[in-house]
Length: 314
Image (tube, rainbow, N blue to C red; front, side, top):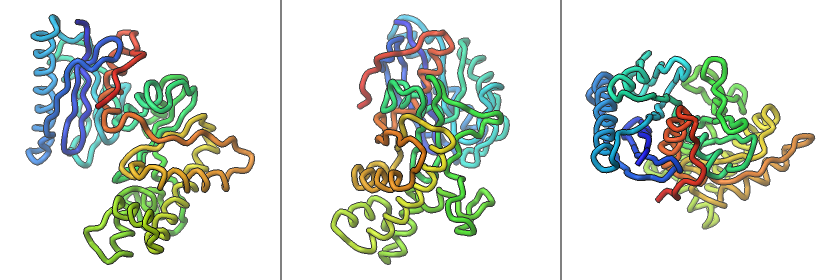
């Protein structure tokens, strides 16, 4: 059966799949990234994993993969096929597309992890059918993917969508990027965890604990949560003023709080808009499968065959 290799490389683990022409997931696999062994070992691990996937396809599906797509973190030069920089993986200007194409003998697409996940959410997930969308995952940090007409905009230098570094509190908390008051210092899952640990006096408390305490009516938790929601709404309104998306897709760990997040967030955004059109604000649909599914889409795009009806992720 004709298929493509899809690989989603994270800071600690890799998710992979063999994806059929209609987007069906024919095989799944996971492996640790092995970053403790150094950047060269991580690259070799990716190449070996991809080769194993190719062999599995040839053995069980009757032919090797027709193409491959890989999503990686950090700064990605998609046009040149370079994993330009990743602090977590220790990469600088790794020609990953070329290395994979040489190992596999097929066309390879390289994408940024958040933009690749956004591609999947926009085409086959929560943004299906929207001609303009913004995908914002709220995790350790906050990033974004700008969807336009079925593709995701990378920008002139590969930095498009970095909504987490919109300054929402001028002169506020220092950010590792060098600015002060960045959105991700107030509204990421990591920021909420830090604020709630301090407010509750429990150094082990995290954002999920804060959300549970909000539901139970704890006033300190409500205050911490609302501060994060207000900062997030400020950042999102700046983004929608610039981009005018039809659909705003919120994912990541913080979105797992469900309506505990979405009800106050929709209200906060609604209160802030004036002339802007209010987008539909929805939770992401694909979970941690988004990056892998998006990598599969990148692979099929190389062959001018785009999946249309994927299997629901489990």
